[in-house]
Image (cartoon, rainbow, N blue to C red; front, side, top):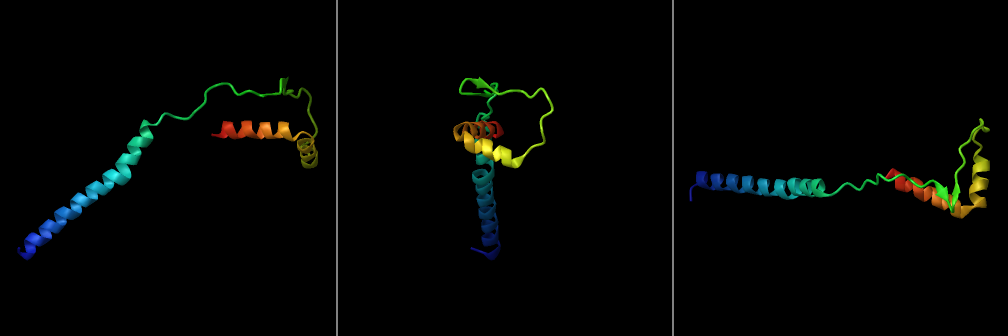
Length: 92
């Protein structure tokens, strides 16, 4: 086998390997991503906690006080955990 034929064979082998690599690492994951259904929940979020509706403030409330918020969260950890879980679900 001559030197030129060997180089031509190596070029074709490299080209074939490049096409396979593109198909496996780029095209296949892209197609699987496009086939997946979006994980979006279009339902109206539930803003109630154990049967109680959250109150909408009608008057201008005091400025946000971090210590008060922490005390309220510690007073009712279950409601706080539920609220955080709902926020995280909405962020998805």
